[in-house]
Length: 128
Image (cartoon, rainbow, N blue to C red):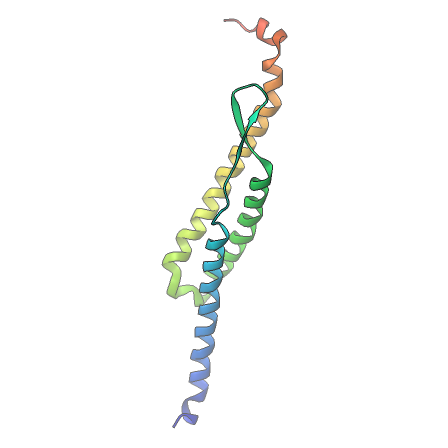
């Protein structure tokens, strides 16, 4: 009789629902990155290109949000069935965040120093 197994069926249904919602959340996170592209812009007349702000800001917001969500899902026992997708995804996000942070730090220092070393007065003082 079904009545005798109702509690177990309810528990299984609850587990399946949570697994499904986590899997859909992972699918949505991955879909959010489709179409996002970093853009470069020429910096003055230097022949150098820098990352443009808009796409970078959007990527940083997605990274912050998706890393938190991925870590929360990973900590759940309901993530086990799709761990093979989730763990590499979380690693990619963290790696991208690290790369982007380092890139922006380097770019910021370059933008600070470029006018100094680009000035004629400084260039004349540097030995050739």
